[in-house]
Image 1: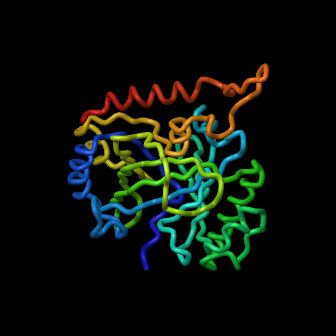
Image 2: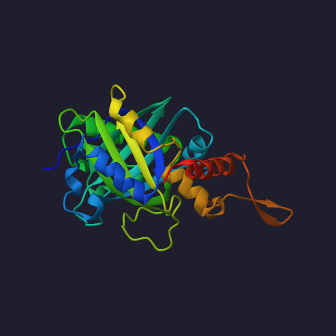
Length: 281
């Protein structure tokens, strides 16, 4: 059975790099870490990840990200293929200042609809009898009910991951071909019909660590002249797709106009473009 390498609490630093730089970063990183077992033997050492993000109708978690709120969370269902027997992971990702805290529990795919419709999570829904996993799903459902969250967007990408083999304290990932598509039902399909590509042609590099900042991280950043950016797949996907696709219109004098709750998304996207231009290729 594959090892669960979920880092429950960590710090993470994000960078946007070119595909050519990603190949050089791979050669640098492989001196310190081992390839994640899921990527062995696959093109670009990468495996597919799919996430269905849930949010309130007023897009609370989206706006929390756009406005840079220090304490925020995301609700997502993560899956890796669309086979009926494959698990679905309910993931709660919190940001507390600069720290990332994650909880997740594996659920039977045939139990997903019942949980999203309000059924209380119980052992009968779970893939594991580990009480920590059930608690994670219970916390997820509690927050889902609090903000009345529903499916809003499907995010997909290919992940190349490098991991420390002895203590799971360090992890480096490179995410390619990031796609986003509005989705308002839990299809849990890998198919996308007309996605947007919010980061193309760039690759998202993430440096993740649970303890002291490794010295070789500093060397990597300096060698490739990297600059930190905000690269939130769900939030930037919505901004790229357009808020109008999520019902954000108000009637004014008989005409439909977009509801502007602030200039944050436009400022964020401008900052993103500026950061991309600064990254050395």
